[in-house]
Length: 282
Image 1 (tube, rainbow, N blue to C red):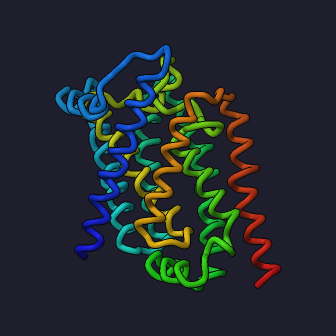
Image 2 (spheres, helix red, strand yellow):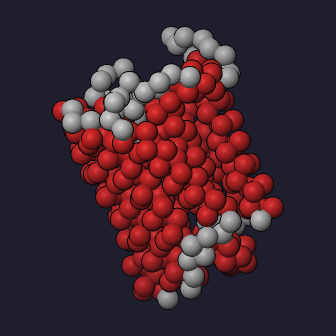
């Protein structure tokens, strides 16, 4: 219990530090406005101090529900819970956010929700195939037991493509590099932020905090595949993610349909290939 609590708050702290570093390094690049390192935290404080401009009573419940499911998924991950249960909770979190976009009854919000649904199908399929591969190799879906197996038999040796596909799913969910669906809410265009148009004020702050919590979930899940001690594996995963975050600003964006096609090929395709390979090998 104590170990799980330390991991829980440690992961949240680590994700916060990653985003602070990414924001600061990005701000000192040529052509960008300089800022201070705690600017993202200040942004959330300002959002929490504002009231939601949306009168739809479900908006607040949807954002709070998404955060609750995100925190539940993180707790289950750090406490060694069942992989499929964690995936189910993440699916519920995603559905709450998508429901908010659809409830806005705005054209751009509906279009962004359609992109979100396409992304949802891709990453959920990939994670389910990965679950089948995990069970075939380890005989269990409990993360605690999978960690024990990985430390002895090197899970990475059997599931290299599944690890790669999960990292692509992570980039897909984070909307970075060549897997950006254009629904991050970070860009200047209205369509880019359309998935979050029904949210404003503290609602928006809660949704964005949910994204940070989800980042911690994916970092911890990916670290399970690495053969080192859990905290070393997590640090390596976090450093790699930070490098990808910093590289994101230098990679040109593609249309969301091309991103979806590439995600199916690379994420879903590699997960299926790894499972077929296991079926032939074991």
